[in-house]
Length: 348
Image (cartoon, rainbow, N blue to C red):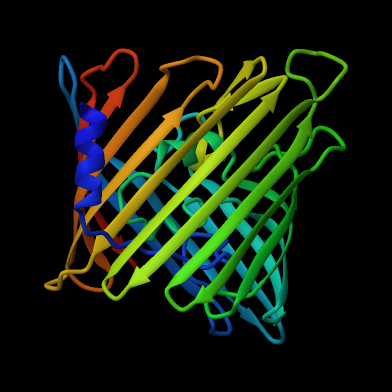
């Protein structure tokens, strides 16, 4: 019954979302100025858990400050510090999350080296300050960890070109960690823009690591993803699907700033979301997002569904208020765990 109501609501809703190019590697757009540009944002919020008993808490989802700029000729730099202690309490704060240098002479072939977002998935590579909802989808958070890694990336194109791509060779160990073996993750994302209003893309990730169970054979992780983004004036609709196959061990959680729990054993998981938002004027943008997540493909009736109903209000170009009601439904047992989140974001 819940699924039917959610599906009907989605089919009759209007949506829009903020999307960035495949070339997005951090939390902000790259600077075109020489020298140092200071930037950042803070996201204080209140979370009300509609559980039994209910909970409520003030926190910071993110509090970031960074510098970026260009150096004559053809080089750029980008560094960001995360100051919030709430995003991932397994990681000490403040911590350096992005730090990379890029060679940018050619639009069709740029090269970056350092710590940056893994070039997998559309939602992962949407800057945090540009998300249409307060939280990313559970499929993205669970199946694309670690978001950030150290490595070398080749990328080119944009939404203004027919083809855009990014190819990365990464440690595979996550944020701020040295690789402890000779294996490297291979990550790629390709986008095609056949029409001015249409983008479709695909992502792939493959990596090996030393067996978490102490076995001779390495653990293997494979990720496949597909994405679509459609723009019709003030209306934008997007969706994404991720499939994950883990051999030897899997990582549960982790998300944006690393961490996560290592679980021994083979596992397949998958998830998707459909999201849209409509600009109705008066700085108002209603948003709706439907998520589906399967934590273990070997277990039947093990899915989770989350519907986010939200409203974004823009006071100006730098200040935004987001109100999200998250309606969660689990199988086979539905727990009372809906959530109301109100976040105020200021960029500088």
